[in-house]
Image 1 (cartoon, rainbow, N blue to C red):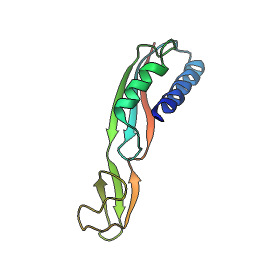
Image 2: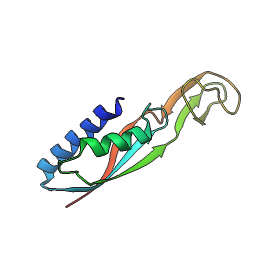
Image 3: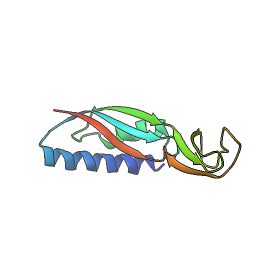
Length: 113
């Protein structure tokens, strides 16, 4: 369950941002999570609640923006949407795909006081 360590990293970012930007409480966190990132969304929600307890983000709402997996197909020269790594191209069936998006996780936005 690496989601717990991911949430600890998110909390560390929040604490550093609070220090740099002088805010005291986080009300909402928007996270972008790609379909190919290997992050379990429900585990992330559970871990977030546990990790932020008694911190500046205690009680904060977690909004998750799910991004689709994308890849460049070398055979048909198009960007395609894929469900998981090593999928075939949905257009031509080729496995010559290079992942170009959907493997990231980042803090998109914060609502703070």
